[in-house]
Amino acid sequence: MTPIMLELLIRSLWETVLMTLASGVISLVAGLPLGLALVATARGGIAENLWINRVLGAVINGFRSVPFIILLVALIPLTRLIVGTALGTWAAIVPLAIAATPYYARIAEVSLREVDRGLIDAVRAMGGNRWTIIREVLVPEALPGIVAGFTVTLVTP
Image (tube, rainbow, N blue to C red; front, side):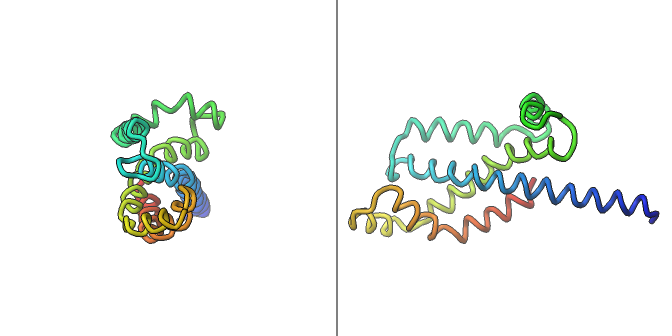
């Protein structure tokens, strides 16, 4: 392997790692609150609001059902607005993050739904508000699934 090819290989590997990590962090930061919102606004949730739940679920399902290459092309104007270009490593992060966020939101939602309902009821009975339930019960109890889902999200796109 020539030195030029080796340099290109190393640079390409670094760009791949950068795109994966940046889009992964964005999907975590945006996807976890979306998953929490889906669980909280669901029927019987801590902030039940079926209208918000259905709209949010429809938007998430809409983005999840679009093939990535179509999403990539459709997001070119937004990518140019955010990054200033539609080509390159930084430009690829925008569609990758937008594609990974709803995917991770659904994974987080599944993990959060598995939290024992009795724990939530116990915190409510002790006077805990919504934020206490989220911070002290939902996220800590679902953390193994949240971390596993994040790992799957990182390797999927």
